[in-house]
Length: 259
View (cartoon, helix red, strand yellow):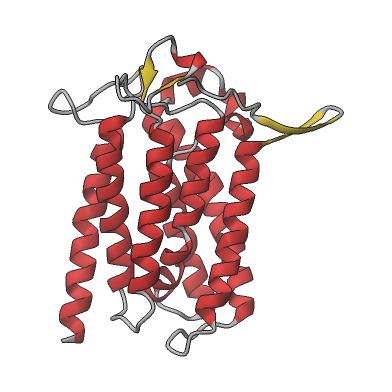
């Protein structure tokens, strides 16, 4: 199978180009607003609709700033030291989930203080809204021909022109399914009932960390980094370990506190 060669530019208006990658982010934020309005109507969720729009502002800043800086620090620091202006080229890709997570956690802390809510109250509300955006972001990676998979002989392997003549796992689509669809279903159904404060946040961290750890086995490690531990563990997998660890702690503490 051959990659369909989708043009990463969705629309050109003179000197201005609109990229599919950016559109995926916009749709993801829109989906978050839509799902947030649904959650806010539930009797056990004490949120005003206006709070959702305020939260979006904080989350967007956290995702964009944290995601970009995280990619620079975790994956390509020396390159951006040589070409610092490219730090602003968001349309070309290069966002780190783990950096974005750190940025969002900080933005949620600021939002919680402003709204007189606890950090975990905010985290529990927003966690089920995020996976759809993760999945759409991976589709953006697929369109950009980046973060492709390892070489494979499976019949559904794809030949990505930018990656050479070998067939590869479409790992971006694997991650879209795991981190997008599967994680969304887990969190959405788990959050339908009242849960102890911190429990949903804990499940989010454990769920994403575990699913991303699994998906990394099919994803080609960054060529300039390669495996960084035990000759097989990638940077993405290493960054997932503290997510799972702290997620379990948060979930256990929440469940025990409610017992």
